[in-house]
Amino acid sequence: MTIATKRQYESLTEERAILYAKGLNFFSEDAELSCSEIGDGNLNYVFHIKESNGDKSLILKQALPYAKVVGESWPLTLKRAIIEANALKKQFEFAADLVPVVYATDEELAITVMEDLSHLKIAREGLIQLEPYPKLSKDIGEYLAQTLFHTSDFALHPFEKKRLVSEFSNPELCKITEELIFTDPFFDHETNDFEPSLRAEVEAIWNNEILKLEVAKLKRSFMTEAEALLHGDLHTGSIFASETETKVIDPEFAFYGPIGFDIGIFLANLIVQSITREAEARNTIVQHIEQTWEVFSSNFSILWKSKGIETYKNTKGFEEYVLEKVFHDTLGFAGCELIRRTIGLAHVKDLDAIADEEQRLDFKKQALQVGEALILKRYDLHSIQAVISLLEENHK
Ligand code: SR1
Ligand code: MG
View 1: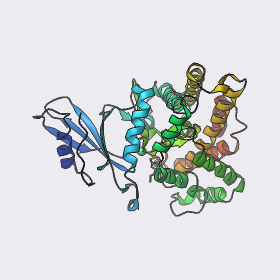
View 2: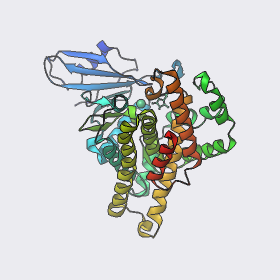
View 3: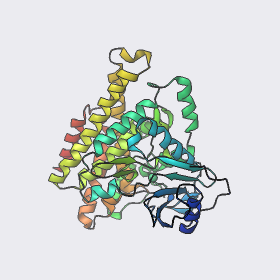
């Protein structure tokens, strides 16, 4: 496929998206195309374009120059489109089955043309409907190990690693995370959004100096520790899934950061599910939580031994030290994600769509409690089983 010709930025409509797709040499000349805008995220348009007289289809994703969730008053760099496309290509090198194929990019129009995955469902939606997704945690554990190990100093020549750090410099999107995950929910900030009945719990967080000190440390780690190329926003809305397939999409927040961040964000979104489920359905999620960490850590360890280039890799205790550091970071980041999804700007449907007010508020209080516990106790928890015990304690 050819790269599209350059032109000035304009946001597409469904009609214009069809015209654009016709210029890609992807569909045959006589193809009749239909298009629908299917994006339900916070930041972009997603056009699904398919042949009415054939089987071919693709996704055309266009970044908007502002955050859709807030409106035009929140301008946002279009460079995130090329960051996302380049991150997908880099991740494809190490986890080809677990990310969409990028067909073409257009930096001027902030467009990425990619594989159509619309036969899959967004994992958040499926999990809310209690889909078991038997492959989800194994696939995500594998994705995390492969993408994080191979982009770290443990696998790359230091020159290449630092070149990638520079290529994936993503300050505007990082600033969103620094504010929305690590800062605003812990202060009386105008971006916060919480139910009035939660005010006592929220004020307790704002006044908890011990908690805020730990969040400050996690924010510093996020801002300064360029350990690996992260997805940067690995919640369950960034994953397409079915019984047999898992694909990680949307890495527009990609940058070099601490390995535990991606793992923590994913686990936090599973933990939200564990909070909202009845005992029987909860078991499936508990297994996913356990398996994500087990698969990540065992694969990371295999890669360390088979492909690691660090001179100290066989020094007794170093590998264990690295994995333990990642584990503690993971729990802290998961705690911040739980809190921000409950009282910050960007919420999750898993909690907000619960119609029964009493139950919804109870679950939100649990999310805040678990979030706080994960941040404060992260150095006392030494295994994923200990985390599961903490979650079970919370249900009693
Ligand atoms: C203004 S963006 C709000 C949230 O949506 C994205 O998916 C990120 O999670 C961000 O924090
Ligand atoms: Mg997204």
